[in-house]
Length: 371
Image (cartoon, rainbow, N blue to C red; front, side, top):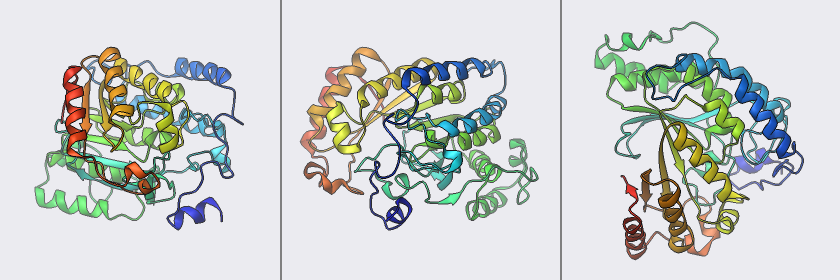
């Protein structure tokens, strides 16, 4: 059974089945670092996304980077697996993604951090990690889930909705709801349709726009196309597993106001066993430190049953020392979703005693906890 059939049947494909990965067949990392430096030097100069005096508008920066990101798919090193596959020729790496992106959700959500919600969240299918406990495992493990995401090539008006965000302020709420419903029901979303839905959501009171997955880094060209179509003054959030490469970070620099990053595991052994990810600690810490320098950073940790001491304690201690004052959201609502039952300790929810112990650790270390 091939990867497509396996995923369509709802069973987990092996990330090592018929695909390249782990840098075993890709470009050596030292050479790839040189390529990443070259790409960073070729990009337009940008200030942090929150700056009011960007050298160029955010949309212009994103638009200028789309072709670079798409060309990078020919030798893909967007994540730290460094597979080196040619996704433009339909070669598949550990994420199983090809050249085209798919979207499995685009809607207003209210379950994220209080300072971000309501948020219009656009979720791309597919991910470079294989977390057995993923709450959206069916879509996150399968880059073919959802609807094909198209770059808009036609008129800048769809269903009577103008590109200008100001135009949305001049329509009544009934019209806005109707347009939102029409856009969300499209069978084939494209850049402008999703951007138009986001603008309607902002006009109706959403506080921010979030791009997530799966893992959006996997589909960086499409994510950049989307950013290019969004209002420059919108608060943009990059929700990530913090497993992106330096190449990906260079392409994202200056585009997002907030990086909302997961720090899932406190050690490499748990990361390998639960998500099949090697060298996790080094990679996530590198990404978090970069994000803290280049944008506002919020770090999420999902407290898992049986992983307070081995994961949360080590995560909390590192954050206290290396990123003091960073916003941290300690989430205790673990649910044994997807394939969590593969691991005995993940077959239930987090106990009250575990949640209390985790909270006590955070307070002892004076972490900047948010909800």
